[in-house]
Image 1: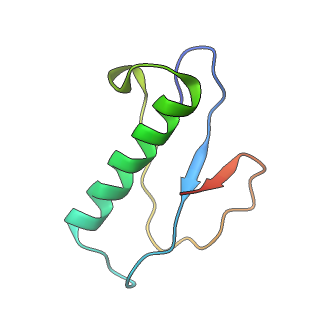
Image 2 (image 1 turned 60 degrees about the vertical axis):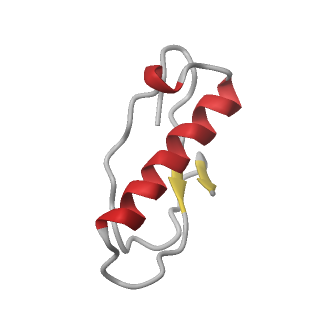
Length: 67
């Protein structure tokens, strides 16, 4: 997730199963966008979504945040 001058953040969380439903992946994206918007006090519509990647495990990135 990113927006303007604010940093890019990679969000992650444990999946309920190896191949998640569209509902679960959509909820994750919605939650990530909302979390980013609340963290940086920006409108949800201004948040740029990153690429959704399933079954990746815990990211090694220093900007990764579990939600």
